[in-house]
Length: 118
Image (cartoon, rainbow, N blue to C red; front, side, top):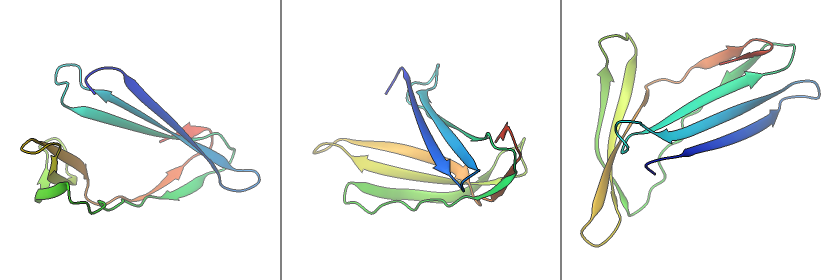
């Protein structure tokens, strides 16, 4: 993917009177087309605050994906600790792609206020 947008919308019914939806926007970086960006927005259109617990999915084990490195990192402008995982995926006989995922080390709970997004 080196151009274009991918948009995904998920709707969640929390109760009879409460719902929320999540939008995912996936696109290639303008200057570095090999860098894929994912933006996630959580929208609460209801009149009540609700809490979300996030769970980070673990990588599915396959023969084609090999984890090369896993380390904690910090950026100068942030006091948060991130997790950087470097993987290699085999695509053909002697070809492979190396990709890096950077995510929050700990994913916390979020309080989404009425008629707001996170």
